[in-house]
Structure formats: structure tokens, C-alpha cells
Length: 314
Ligand code: ZN
Image (cartoon, rainbow, N blue to C red; front, side, top):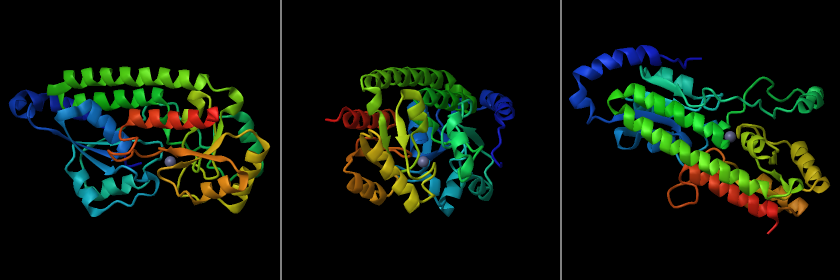
């Protein structure tokens, strides 16, 4: 892993520098790069006007299969902090960092999250799968942000990193972090209440790639997906046939398309089973400003609205 944590060393050096250049530092914005749109939104929420933010994989972008550009290397080289998801999400990033020659610090937003193995945490699942070992056993599911409790961990990691890199504004980052965390916790309670109102036997839905495992574990929804944890993989005809069988056999409320995945397979599944297509879920990227999920909190609220509508059967 090229990613390295040098926060303590950097911190010690900075506090000395901050004393001598405080007048300048108070005005200068901290240059921060976020690897994808959801992290970019969190940095903006907490860093506000003190941060000069660039986001590599923007709204509606798919970070699983992103191909960095030479301009990205230049952007990273100029940044003091690079905020990444970690958990194997940005597989293209270590090479990009190396190519950029960056000496900035890499902040892993998911540090401290309890990782969920790809394919789920259930013992019986691992045993039943003994026959075909095509899952990446041992690898982590990267989509931790889909559980708002993990979003709180991300926010606190980002807040601490901004404060350490820009100590002049540390109090403001701390206040912004706590205000944001309160909003995330309030939304988490709201999501729990909305999903608790749905009967247990209506809480299974189909999505295209397996991006909602953390959401499912946190809020009691079962997501079935013909594609694994990365959009890089393609579902085989057998995978799709198995899902179609399962939808017919079980009481599956709806199938959903995602903003970062091809809709063809989900259209086929809906056609062959007669299952309703719910709205589009935002899994790995925010929407643009004029669509329903331009921020992390609005993304979660939108997804929950689509899911509960479909599961309630209205
Ligand atoms: Zn994904």
C-alpha cells in the first residue's frame, strides 16, 4: 500500500510553522482533494470557506472503474490533504499518487469503521458458498458510507484531519464537525423510524451491484444483487437467472436501478418477473445540483424514500 499516515509527524511540524505565519495562514485556503463526490460533500460541509476543494470522481461518476487523467496528478500534487474512502474502493489511486509525486497527506475517511466482508457477514452464507469460491473472501466491502453511523466516523476523521492541517481554524472545523454529526445522527434516527414501519417480509429488494450491504445491515433491509461489490464485474446469465428465480420464489418488493450502473440488466429482470422498478438509487456517487441527491444527506433521504415507497407497495 502506498497510502501512508504521517499525520503526527506533519502535525508537529505544522504547529511550529503556524506560529510564524499565522497572519497569512488565516486567509489562505487549505487545498484538499477528495477522491469522489460523497467525500467531497463531507469536506465542504466541514471545511466550508477555509477549504479549496477539488473532487476527482464527480457527481454521477463511477469510482470503481475511474481512469485518472494527467490533470488529476497535477491536482493531487498541489494538495495538502487527499481524502480517500479506503477499503479498496479507489484501486486506481496508489498509482496516481505515486505518479503525482505528491507529498500531501492521505486521509482514509473510513478508518475506524468495522469493515463488512464482501458478500455479507453471515456465517451461513460463507458455508453455503464453499462449493464456488468466486467471491473475494477476505476482501472488504467498500460502501461503508451507506450506514449513517459510518458517515459519522467519516465526518470526524475529516474534521480532525482538517484541524491538524490548518490549526488556525481548528475550532471552526470542530464546531462544523459536531453540527454535521448531529444532522447525520438525526437523519439516522429518521431512517430507522421509516424502515421500522415496513413489515419485515417486505424488506427485500434487488439492486444491480452490491452497494447497499452496510445500509442493509444497519437498517434491516435485504439487498439482492446480480453483480458483486464492484461495477467492474459483469453478471453472468446464470447470476441473472438465479435472481429471477429468487424474485419469483420470494416476496421481493421491487428492483432498483442505480445512478452508476447500466440499467439494461435490471430492465430485463423487471420484464421477466413483472417486478416493479423502484426509483433510481444513488449508491456510489451524488447527483448534480438539479437532481435529487446533490449532498450525502439528501442522497440517503432520497434512497430511503424510494425504498420505503416501493416496499410499502404504493
Ligand atoms: Zn460500488
